[in-house]
Length: 129
Image (cartoon, rainbow, N blue to C red; front, side):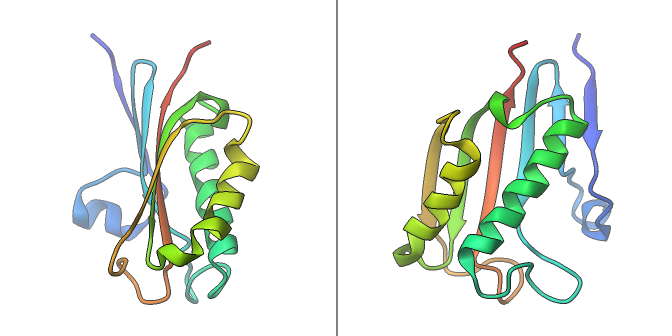
């Protein structure tokens, strides 16, 4: 039987909603939808590339806590509020993961949980070491 490791970001919403920033079971790590939400509004303001960068930095931190790295990512999902800005999001995704080339999905959504958030990213990893 595999053990289940829960990774928390410390956000109050985790207990209220009943989720973890990431969950590791065996060699599989799933990282929850991650935004650039900050105490004073979105990290990066209205710059979707900077928000994407903040998402991926947070995902990297969660993976590291679970014993994984960006290189272990096999799938990402990107939710954007304006698909016409796909290239800005995609370029940052490529900066972090272009060498890994995970299966990736990007879709437009009508809005995210807080006004001003422009992108949310999920990731799944398999530790292959």
